[in-house]
Length: 314
Image 1 (cartoon, rainbow, N blue to C red):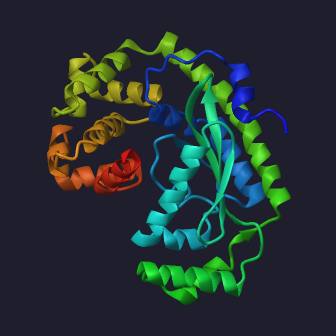
Image 2 (image 1 turned 90 degrees about the vertical axis):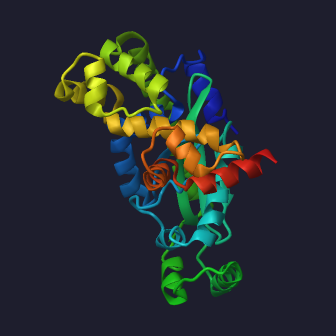
């Protein structure tokens, strides 16, 4: 066996980056880069598999609604009981894949793989593919899986599920591992791109954007409208919108929402705080808005996130 992806990336950049953005924001920027989008498109077409880039703290389903998502997995993602089992697989991958690529198999016999993505010795996230079977699905496998779903109380159309399951992508272990090695090589290229982004952050971030970030950090619980913050940094709303989006890859509203959700995650570890209290504490105007935004960003509801964190800390 050769060196792991993590070891090779550390040789390229062994200095720990001084990050001004969170790993999640940094991964968002990489996912919007042309190099990742071009590679993702080529990988989709060449392999028939999905490819996602996810931050380390991502308790969600990375391939849902993406190109080449397994049709069986798409159905499972819409059912809460089965979705919980899928989320546990994602957590296992994130926990075990921090140093080297890891492949795991779900209850349905489908494989998923993560490849760690590093800049220097900082783990920022993962490149992930999978939802693939290493052998053709069988009636025995489907029947066993169906019994498990019935035991969980999952309400699905078994005929539709069977058709989706037997349409799963199938490839040999050797072929699949060859595709994983392609992702490992690409992870090294992304590390180089990431390093350039960090250098740009350190040297060239516009002072207007830097001040706006600081305002969000210090006043995220307050009513921070786009117009208000633009005025606080002495720019027009139009100019501020363009400047902020160019610098961060996100609109100001998206950035503010993510910042509030990250703060909410910290508060959700306190079992004495109600979810509604946390929603208003971090600046959301209603519980429904908080729940909707949290799910969009974190991939699960605040209650699910709290339950998961409590189990991890037991």
